[in-house]
Image (cartoon, rainbow, N blue to C red):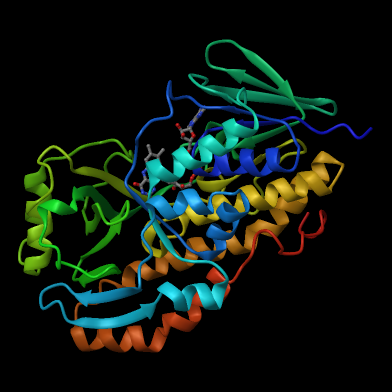
Length: 401
Ligand SMILES: Cc1cc2nc3c(=O)[nH]c(=O)nc-3n(C[C@H](O)[C@H](O)[C@H](O)COP(=O)(O)OP(=O)(O)OC[C@H]3O[C@@H](n4cnc5c(N)ncnc54)[C@H](O)[C@@H]3O)c2cc1C
């Protein structure tokens, strides 16, 4: 009988849990090692387009998602002071019709919870909490993961899904350059009952202004509003999702912006403002060894300007599971996975970085022209959203080797 490889996954974030669920769904055993002592309520809004929703549906999460997601009707790009609509990209039914699944806004904690439940339902023992990875060793027979508390675990494959500060990436690639984009990101979540009911349609609103832009959308069946403020700051600071900063600094950053933005900022809890630095990392050309690989932010850290970081991690998980299920030799499976993902994820990293400048054009007429010329409805949609990680042909193992 065929022996299934045991996959050790470091990190129970969005990518690690998706990979675990997709592997278990195909009958392949996994163990996920997460440094946090509990799977908790962390983060704010994430966006999930058709390319990622197809994977979530395939994992049987359709009904559960319906209870919590918001389906935006469009992206709306507005001028920071007048609120005038500069450009619109349809989402809603149009997105679903063109790309085969809906576009969702979802709280990261809700998505995380659904994925964790799906994993634990298939194997209640598969997630090990309070387990911080330190390093790994591999040889032709297998891989050994060393945890920081001295424990060792053996398996056949190791997947570093340990996010932007990945320990596994550092071991595979050594130090890779990080450059500060010049932006920090504010993030906050506001209960909508503190806001006028008509403050905003069910859209993803991008307010564009000189040296900063703000993104707002509803979460959790419109009970919450997600606010992200991206602002040029001269000095880099911590790249941490859990660092709080004074509300008064957020308020000052958006002084002079439209009354809608002021109303939202005024409704934010005074101790509920998170702020972190946005760093750029140039895509790499290899992120695997014979028995270890990376996925999600550990493989291709992605800036938020295209709202596709979580979607790429979900796609990675699905494609990796297909490769490990279809290809007997572990090294070939990892090469096939990597070759299938390098080009696409690099394109997303580059396109995300380019969008930052588009949102910051100072002159209104020039900004309008730039949106028109870029024609994002066409350019963004086809290559990004029509991709199907469940059916895309698997790449040859040796293609780029
Ligand atoms: C606390 C937190 C809050 C976030 N909030 C948002 C948000 O509000 N909006 C948004 O768009 N994106 C958010 N993100 C980022 C978003 O989840 C990722 O960019 C995207 O989903 C890619 O997922 P990933 O699985 O690659 O990484 P992540 O989702 O970041 O998951 C990485 C996981 O690895 C674990 N880990 C790290 N190092 C180790 C180690 N050495 N050993 C074991 N485990 C380790 C981390 O604890 C984490 O659970 C957040 C990430 C984190 C960790």
